[in-house]
Length: 251
Image (tube, helix red, strand yellow):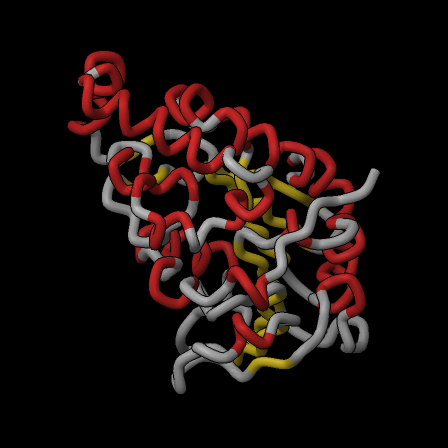
């Protein structure tokens, strides 16, 4: 099957502004990394969730994504997840944040992470079937476009090998990392093209579909239909949704 790809040289320009580390998610990442002192961040993008106080090296193939990394970010090299240019057991741990669905194939990059890490491999991903009901309803075309790209949790575990566990991460109500599910209680935000420009799925849709989705959601909000059915979400502080950490320890 041919995998759909997003050209981040064209679509990665707003990620540094809208895809920032949420401290509640970052704390879970830090705990999963344990006492690892050297960490490889694979598919690192603009540097979200890179832990402070540790030696971190980032791997990112897109020049557009590498360019806005701050002076305090980890050093970054131009390389791909599928062929990491490192020896076996080169680092204490490896991490990947909302990126494996861009790898071709994901299983190759996951196996590479396991190869180069002496200790834990930590993968932040989504289980799309657990997205909030309203997103599956109003944004159905987005979910349909993304679903073939995301490996199942079982497939991730198999590719990583070792002793693998999956942790659920609640999605904070005011999540500052602007991924798809972050706006589960703030649907109005998805009407903002600046927000959508930092979510890769929109680049995968056929012409006209994004406008149709935005019109559908906008009309539901204006008419009060969304709030009549899902307005109770606005009072919740977190959602047990689609966020997952897959953590592999050596066998």
